[in-house]
Image (tube, rainbow, N blue to C red; front, top):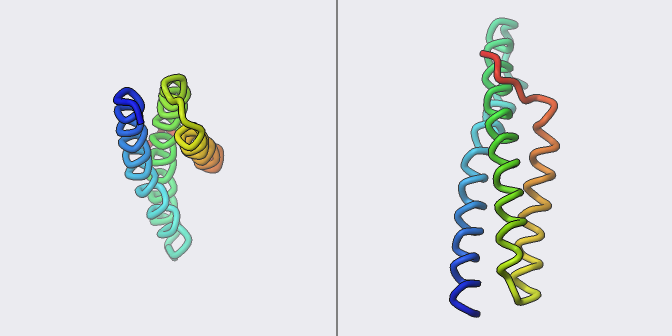
Length: 105
């Protein structure tokens, strides 16, 4: 693997890890909402879910573009396929959380 491709691979890995960290908060809050009994608690957690989902959507837009840009520097079919999977999964998560996204507290 060429030095440029190794550098791009490291950047893509960092992007993947960073995106995962952002999605964890939305997933945990979403799970808690389903277990809440009090309407006030549910409302508060829904607001937090909206903010967390908004963060995921905003981050994913940037990450999708970043992956697309990096893909032009990849040369091996394996690296291109892996980057494509990363981009496609990021799009899936973005689209899943988009309906819940809200900037409002």
